[in-house]
Length: 233
Image 1 (cartoon, one colour):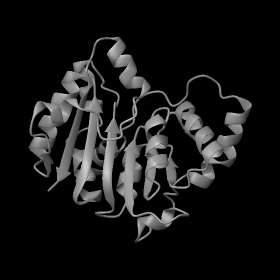
Image 2 (tube, one colour; image 1 turned 90 degrees about the vertical axis):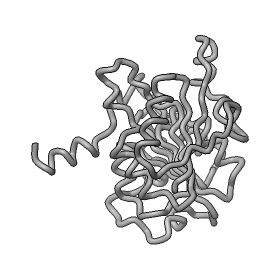
Image 3 (tube, helix red, strand yellow; image 1 turned 120 degrees about the horizontal axis):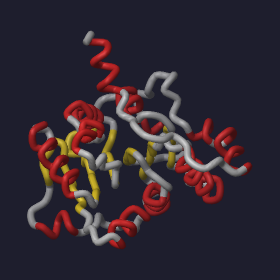
Image 4 (cartoon, rainbow, N blue to C red; image 1 turned 45 degrees about the horizontal axis):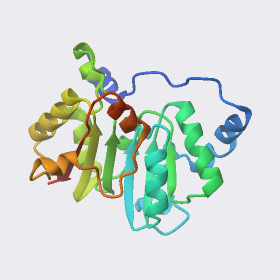
């Protein structure tokens, strides 16, 4: 395999459906009109100061990869107006849900990207983010599919490049094998320090955490969640 081919495989990290049920008329309208206004344009060079992506002053920058229905992202944007958020979600129906909230509430501190998160990560400048959130990512539970998990050697390299010194990578999951997978990959990378000092540190939800539908589903099915925090070193 050529170097270009290996690069392509390393970059294209999204696997799965991009669309579910047909969108309603209002959702189609938001995707056509509001999405282009909020979407990060990767055809343009990344600004030297990423804060300029937002129409309001922001002091911190935070990336959420795979925001699902957008409950967590919208909550954080409401409660942290001084933070600029970039949310990535390739699934059309999920993007449409978040756009409905943005239309209703405004939330000027949210920008979005509707394709593969690795494309955005490669576009971002070095040391620009204060935090990356990867919350309840697709666990790909079958062992033969584990290579599709977003936490990987190449993506941790991407995280490490775009995070500021001392910035955070936060990972939440209810799948034990993925939690262990993430701990091992971050340990082996060598550029991330796990912040936990006791079991309570990874069993307790993050401060200000809103319960999500994924978390509620896990609890109904008898699974507990882990909340891992790593600091870039």
